[in-house]
Length: 416
Image (cartoon, rainbow, N blue to C red; front, side, top):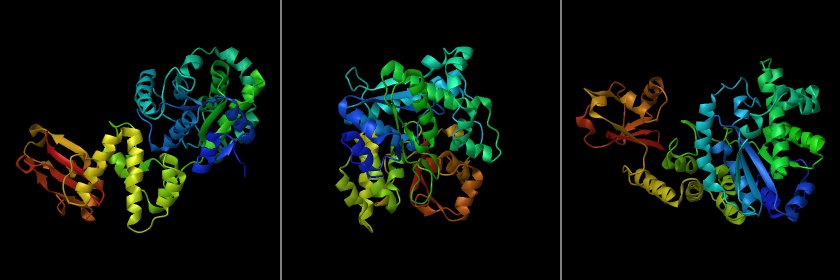
């Protein structure tokens, strides 16, 4: 659809590739022109950190604030007790309230790097839906809220339909999730004047439910805006790498490994990722994304530096780039590589190289480590590693050992 936005926020969303769909382009655009618009995204606390897959949503909230509006980060302290079934093949494992609270504490650390929580008109709010969901009386909720939902309509949503079409069980607990998410939007509108919910395009059904419910109960007009579900140009889900999820918290994925993930972006994705994950001007993103051959590597370094600066700070980005140059260009060790520190007791009479490869995160299992060695993908101090039975003793660790998996993944092992 061709729509020419009047508001800065909608213009940014459309120009930079954030926009998949909107329930009412014109209505939301008009509201954004008229005054400060509070908008929210909900994040369920299923892990201690968010990963790169959530970064597009976080950047949307950052742009919302930068263009003069009010972001709301809603922690799913209540909804995490149920678990979002959207497009999942199985039920999420249920977490205890203590696990959920610990996860929320971890996730909160990320947001403060991207948006400002202050008392100003556009200061962000950090809320938890347990505030209203934990207090619900079941019978009152059924009578006041449940009567507005059609089961026929809920069954028609793609997220539910895909699960049922595959004849996979959908528990009543999970089926309630979309009602609770809709109720969140109603409560945020009632309590904080929230006018728009953002989410990935897989959340469209849940967002529309909230808009309908708020219209029926409060007779208020509110909006939904979704972002595309991102995959890399080679079809991989955004946020995953060969060695697992790319977490945003430094204690779960080091700034160097985070930087390296972006540096390894495929050529075809560079321009698109610069627009989504950095604040470089559009024309710079287009220019850098169009580079070819070895020149595109400079664009990837710019991408890695910009994204890492936002998430971990300029110092961490500079250190990561310096380490990468040291490791790749000069064959050195670098100060910032992921490091495994062993005690003399752990090494004992000797520790197997297979165990060290697993401990350093270069392989997930011993079997995978052995396969890496067998396929000539492993190196020790930049020399091919061919003996899967190699044992490393304390003397061998007098200096740090550099382990490599392929050309791009490295780790240090040393005595701590």
